[in-house]
Length: 88
Image 1 (cartoon, rainbow, N blue to C red):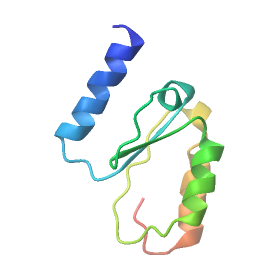
Image 2: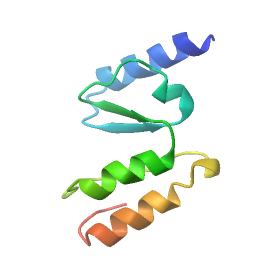
Image 3: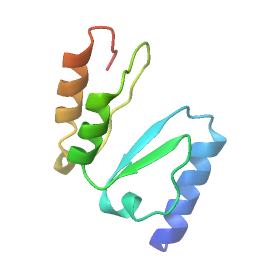
Image 4: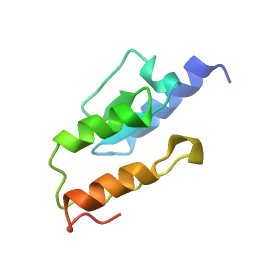
């Protein structure tokens, strides 16, 4: 599938499945012109970390999934340090 078509399908699935919030990381997501109340796009993990460091994230269940190249273990570390109530 063409990249734009694939991204559009993924964003439609996100909207249809009642996902409360999703953070998308990677240059393909950042280039997408749509930021919704559900989806926030970041060019890289460092940009996501800057936002997460400022936010209060409490009483939520998180799924952190992605290729090793994105170093999402840094996200897990940050969230673990912020609160003991975060379930990863």
